[in-house]
Length: 370
Ligand code: NAD
Ligand code: DAU
Image 1 (tube, rainbow, N blue to C red):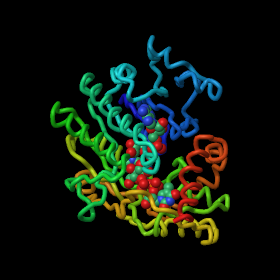
Image 2 (tube, protein in one colour):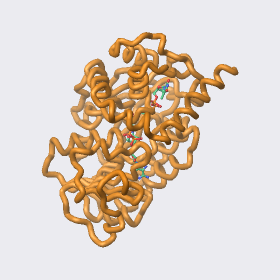
Image 3 (cartoon, rainbow, N blue to C red):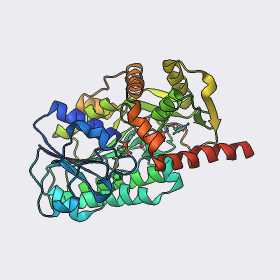
């Protein structure tokens, strides 16, 4: 199989690359990733060497490289290629699609809080970028295209658990942009009969998750004895799945002859509130509850997400294999063992520090003034 994984340097994408190459070592894999603040070559270190890595000029100082421009001449026929590039770049996308038969699109701006601060990049990547990929899928008659959507598209659901045919009520610019990509992908099946499947997974957790999301943020703050900023009353709930179980579901969908033109929820049935998660993290790390700090709520904060996974279970005989406690223990252990991975981001990235200041320090001041 010649497989394109977009967004493969991010959290779930890099877990998926590792999962696929372990299970199918003969597959040829191309990764297309812009390397935004959330993309990290360290997530793929084990696969990279100077001959399979194509980077833009701004990475010259950090990693061995080739210039993406060289790709304009020809692609080498390596079994594994990492290409730094934008899914909105139709020319680059076209050249890559001419060489692959299956596409899994993870590439996206993904953080709800950042979308509240600045929505433009979400619309660009999550909607327009998806359009560029779909156009290329049409032109090159891709054999299977999987659009990674999210349960966030259901927004404040009317009924629980949300089935795939529930109304979409996205509440944040992130969720609305993902809903745009989700429905656009569906329309390319309905209109052009392309072999497209859309998946909507719940909150993932596990190794390599960027420390802006709840679980990695709270683990790494707790390890440093810093406050854990709980939004609002901490009673909003999410459904949680270990990333490897998500990858296992995608593996089945990717290889099945069935399910084209359909949407599949992927979930675990495990619902927990922010406060539940916070207390579990503090307990596993042996840290005091006094680190909990209630802060101003997220604007448009969805109270509850929970999905119905009957379709996925019945059609594909899939069910998650890692229970919550086991997944959480593995995750905490990974962050404890890989301090240099997250310290590089939290202590050295100016972008991260500016984001943290805006998101939490200013938020805390506003809360005190309320
Ligand atoms: P992430 O933010 O960790 O990674 C996103 C990756 O996409 C990064 O490597 C980034 O560099 C890349 N990227 C961003 N814009 C790009 C562009 N224009 N062109 C090419 N690459 C670009 O995200 P994640 O948490 O791994 O999520 C992956 C996908 O899964 C997303 O589509 C997200 O919406 C979806 N999803 C995530 C979750 C979750 O809980 N994390 C749950 C359901 C669905
Ligand atoms: O539901 C799937 C979605 O899950 C994905 O589509 C998104 O890409 C992913 O980021 C995630 O979105 P959430 O908004 O649920 O994830 P986040 O980790 O940001 O927040 C989880 C919950 O924790 C949410 O109720 C907000 C709360 N929270 C989050 C942060 C970062 C806090 O209370 N404090 C925080 O500092």
